[in-house]
Amino acid sequence: MEGSSSSSSSSAIFYDFLDRMRNPASLDLVRSIKSFIVSFSFYAANPESDGKKVQEFYATMEDNIRDHPLWAGATDQEVDCAMEGLEKYVMTKLFSRTFASSPEDAKIDLETSHKIHLLQTFLKPEHLDIPVVLRNEASWLLAEKELQKINAFKAPREKLLCIMNCCKVINNLLLNASMSENHVLAGADDFLPVLIYVMIKANPPQLHSNLRFIHLYRRQTKLVSEAAYYFTNLVSAKTFILELNAKSLSIDEIEFEESMHAARLTNKATEKDATQALEEMTTSQGQTDPGSSAVFHYKERSATGSSNYPYMDKEAGDLTVGDVERLLSAYKEVVTKYTSLCTAVRNLSFSRAEPHGTNLEAKIVVSTQAEETETTFLKMGFTMGQVRNELLSGKKSAPVQKLTDANCTESKLQINEHRVSC
Image (tube, rainbow, N blue to C red; front, side, top):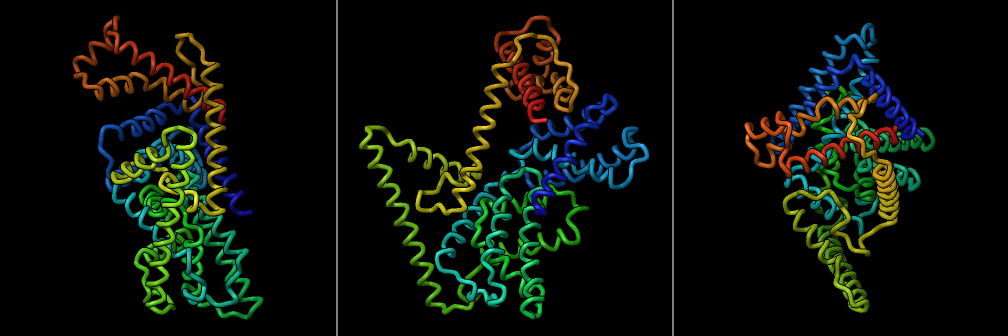
């Protein structure tokens, strides 16, 4: 399938970028990349400003790569592949800082997800005037699965590929209908209603934040042509859903209001039943209820937009079959990472010898360890004079020695982890 081939191509491009960065001649590029990533810790999150900084960094690095000896005589395609690798590396490192970093984004995510959850209970294809010839459940399900993958990736390009794969499934459905059913294609008038229905059925997590992340951090030269068309349609579909009312659909206004009211009541009843069942279970076991505390903590964090865990406010009755698949995938990922982390910690050498990195991660950690230590001291409240005295003196105070030891351990762990992943 196209999705899997795109994923393989993305991995090949990324690892080719890492291979080039392993070359000793790339040290100047490595330092520039690491310096840019570290610079984000000096400022408060601001999506618009952060997006502008990243786009400017892309442009600067593209010029540097074209002029670099490692890319001497390189074709435009080879430079483009290097930039794709750079984008993935940088945005994966900055993901926790840049994704859903605004309270407003988190609020819109919750509003969108809640609105879609209500619509799922009664909305039918005929309400969106989708022709019968385009009502193909198998194709719709495939498109839903592609869209639901969007939260599994951290790189803007890979998130955009999820959108494009979803839209291409729908587009193929339209083409097949035009050939086999003699259906005259109506362009966006056919495409958009199907996309809206697929989006409602899929209810992808953090939809708004994913779309904004792509808009801000995907290289602007790549948000053109087919990619721009599909992306714009998905943004339009999300906006339509948020503003949707009875007049937006082929449905009686009274029927729409009654259906929405019934969906809200059902949602509240489901939450109440699940809460009661949880309380009864914990009471019978003679234990306190950790779930209520976790949900309360999540809602408290959601108000400030600081949570990236879409299932924390869900009850058992809210989950769909698609959610089970995503949760199982997330569980396997957590177990795999935890196992790798435990193995890395067990194998961690206690030697104080400086690691001789041969890959990008090793060179970055070693070349900028002093910079990161200095930054950390400043965040802890040390003055610049105290930082310099600590770093230049032969002796270190107890808290500084403890912090330095922790940084050394973390650096070795990052190196070992990258070697395992590669």
